[in-house]
Length: 179
Image (cartoon, rainbow, N blue to C red):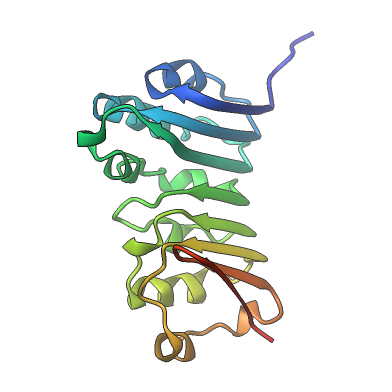
C-alpha cells in the first residue's frame, strides 16, 4: 500500500528548506508561510518549477511571515515566485503575491478563490484582465490595491461577480459588495 501526503501547511518555514516540499508531487493543498532572505530566490524558483509536477494541486498559498534581512526587499523576492502556467489547470484557490507577468489573470480560469497580497502591482489594465478572464471567482481579496477608485470600478466588467464578496484591503479594511 502506498500512502501519499495530500495536505500540507507549514508556518515559519525557512525558504531554504523548500527543496523538501518541492518533491511532494501528490499534494492537493499546500500552504506555506515562509521566512525569507534575499539568498532564497533560487529556492522559490525551484518550488515554482516543481508545481509543473504537482498535477493534482487544488489550493496553493505561499506568503512571507518574516523577513530575515531588511535590506533584501523580501516582497520583491516573493514577486519572483512565478507560478508556471500549466499549474493553473488544476488550481481552484490561490493566495500569494503576483509576479510581474500577471499570468494568473490570463491562465487562472479555474480559480474560484483568489487573494492577491501585492495589489499595488495591479494597474487598471490588470484589473480589467482580472474581471474579464476570471469569471468563476466566488471570492476575491486584493491587498494594497491603491489604483482602484470609483471611476476605474465603474469601467470594469464586474457583472460576473455581482452579489459575491470582494474584499479590497488597503492599510485599513473596506469591503465592497456588488449587488
